[in-house]
Length: 340
Image 1 (tube, rainbow, N blue to C red):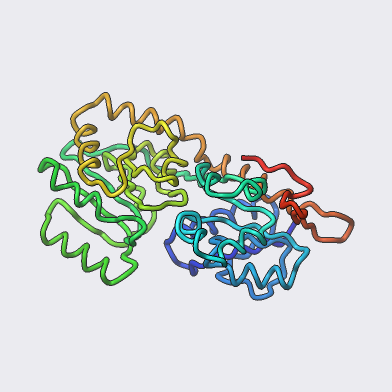
Image 2: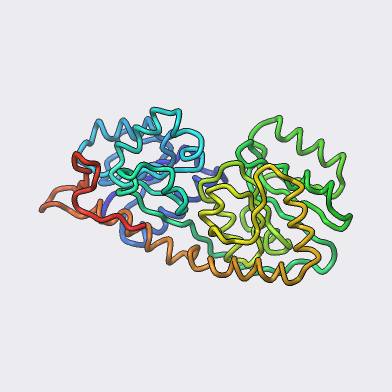
């Protein structure tokens, strides 16, 4: 049994993706027999392994931990903003990757963003979902669901913009907290101008899953994405997905998935919604393509991938000593082969 600390910048009670990931991984690691603490910062707590979610925002914990415990293993989990915004400009993000013994990404297209020497210590762990509900959309009208906090990276109002090109029986139902007053004002403004658009704000997770199950399609319009858990939830429920063609979405859905639209293009999104609304064959094609990815997002698959990623870091080097799988001078971890 090992003592594991998971650091996430999202505070307890937060409904952000990072907090959900930290809580889910903690449950999986505890079920495997480990003692796990979820922290917002590492301040010297005793542990045999630190798992840091978000290379940039958890950098202070990463640096402090590595300075205090240079021989104790460290895993760094890369988010969408790490990969697609921060790495080119942030020395802190790059330093976190260098300090990590193991890097974890949440979808396979993320590997393309990393230098070969970093890929060698990187593992893909797809996020999972185990919802109790199944896809059962209403018989009247056509509902488009948008689930996720309202922030710039998510391009949250793209589906609402698409309503201008869609028939009167199409509505957009949006769930998620506004992460700025400006976003909240914009959502309210849109509701006053367009009765087919409704924003419910932050709702309990169980209710969000019910909305997802009762909607005809989920739209994920992100400008950048690390690996949206809502895609995993939609796949497990059976709700078709229309997604912006950005690497994080492609890494979740596959390169040949038939439901992509160009990032920021509401007309292209509207064409796909209309096609799904009017073409039963296309809707079936989407469902089948999503079903082919469903097994990637099973809890057992995530648990196995997580233990595969962290297991080598927890193997003791000798009696009574903590393990370390520090990379050698070439950057290759000396005691393991990375699985992609």
